[in-house]
Length: 363
Image (cartoon, rainbow, N blue to C red; front, side):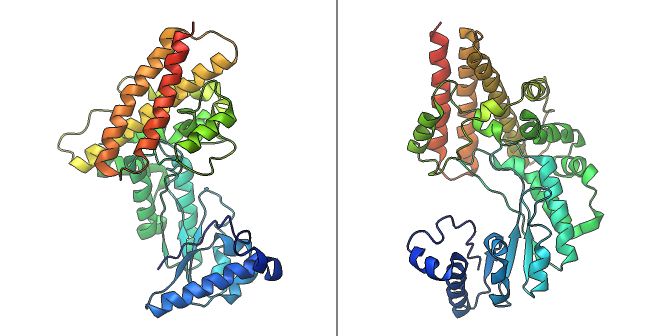
């Protein structure tokens, strides 16, 4: 039974504040988890829990029952918690290493980071006798990232789980494209899509394109955050966004426009491809379109904010492209996902579209 208990932002603040003031937030956390452990045992279940807070308070580690499975997660290729798997192992606690696909807050993935994250965590897991590898995939801020782009990460995590040192990370994408889609040539666009987010900011923040596609061109940041919250997507939109457009690198944006926007960027779908795999490629094409729209919006916004002129045709052209993408997005969403958050995402897309149409009229 995974009781989760990661990232408890309110720990020691709400109902637990008085006790935390007396015994410390770490002790409050431990007491709660021990209660959950008893509940799991009552039902014959072994308790699993995320290990991030425990590693922040390592003095708690010796106090956990020896059957609690620590799920050690970290999502960067060289994350600081990866080598700390050793602390759980040396305390005699079972541990599972937990990398991720780097697919959330991106339309495509951050493929180089995902590959390094899985490979490094798997290596550490073997070194410290981990029980397994739990590969994670999330969907922050509306979960616009489609399923198909994460399949590469799923397969890569499975390969390292089962084959360990036998995986060649350098050739894996080509192997995946050949075995999964029946065409090794698909490795090239998959790799380019997996680089786009990082290219947008010269490697500083691979999630900027995800936010830039809906960030207002001229609405003040604080008003956008209020508007975003009214769409009920999240209660804590990160303070650094909007601001994604400012962080985008002009050379990186041009690389995206030239590379992802090239004619026949995605080859023809191989004949006889199964329906699920066809949908996965449709997801990848959608992610490509969203990244292109984000890059185009960032270029228009940077030009506009810099005081240069943007033609009415350019504003309207972007709005028309967003409208077309939105229809495809809704169709693919309904094939695979629950309806929750669809309306919120469509609302954000309409806001972005309507702003560009308005700017196209104000000439």
